[in-house]
Image 1 (cartoon, rainbow, N blue to C red):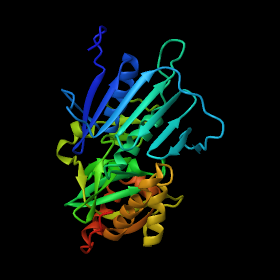
Image 2 (cartoon, rainbow, N blue to C red; image 1 turned 180 degrees about the horizontal axis):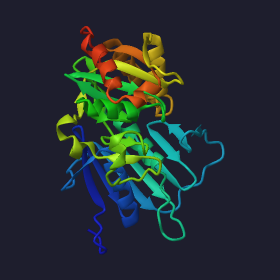
Image 3 (tube, rainbow, N blue to C red; image 1 turned 30 degrees about the vertical axis):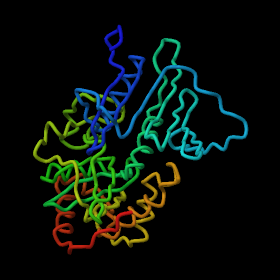
Length: 337
């Protein structure tokens, strides 16, 4: 504990993994803490004696980029990555993380604004955390996850593609919610398991009854409101499921919605696009791709052409997917990568 009362050491749990943070600067520590809670990590009362993943942050001036370094830009999130043997560096104009893969540790240096507030872009912290989680066979997927009668449904789409709207409809129809936006895939016993990452529901204002009464958000998103699913739907929240169905929604300007077949090759291509396979550290890419192929193998896949009736008629999406989910024949598991 520092003289200011700030505890630089904090620990979190995430699906059996132990995550430890060390941040000396109070504002920077609170910012990182709020973001990790937003992601779904559970704070622990006491620091772990040993951690699987460690994040360390300090205020300062990041080292300048050296001439001749082969930085890889990731323009959609505004960061750059440098891959080296057993080490990854990720940075923007104000901060940089050095990720030591063998040690399971990421150390960040963050520049401060003139008023002293830390200029930490959380895409950097997220990249560092996801890179370290892949070292423990936890692989990210930008998708919603729900479950019905033990069968998991994974909904994969770009931001604004209807994942959260579908998740809210299924939740209000009695389904169990993992997350409306972010999952981790993990090999278990020869099959693929989906684990919740960000566990709350985030909706655009005016989209259904849930969005009219939001909960306070630990990490504000000006475009969406937060629904604390674990508080409001305590009996309908789950941390994990075994997926059986992949849904790829696409909003169409038509009155009626419909489900269409999706081939395994199409499903794998879409999953790869939403899994950061090429953007994260490349040595784990083969295991990541093997896990995605295993997910395709154990699931049926459909395109959901979402028409205007899905927004107009609450429960319609749930009925369409329930019929499909209940009629699925058992499928084999996936080989563990």
